[in-house]
Length: 102
Image (tube, rainbow, N blue to C red; front, side, top):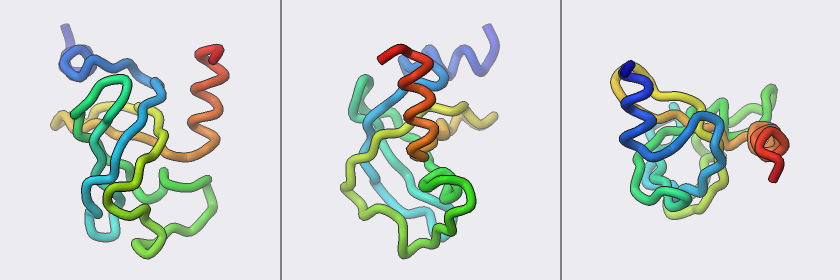
């Protein structure tokens, strides 16, 4: 089993799965830390600032959702050190919905 498969298995999630998450912190200018609340609760993750809005839309820390905000997002991948990355772009969520048939 690869590290990547192990990360997914431990998290109880699959790649390109829609999740609901809560913003837990702002990581300076880089993006937001979140924690999943559904379908699996308690998985820490990160949304890079460029994945908070559609491509080409400038995002600054002033645009980051407030701590406590609930977001829909899509699982993208695990970084080599085990950090789960998500996308909150509406187009990513729409594509995941279309691919899953829901």
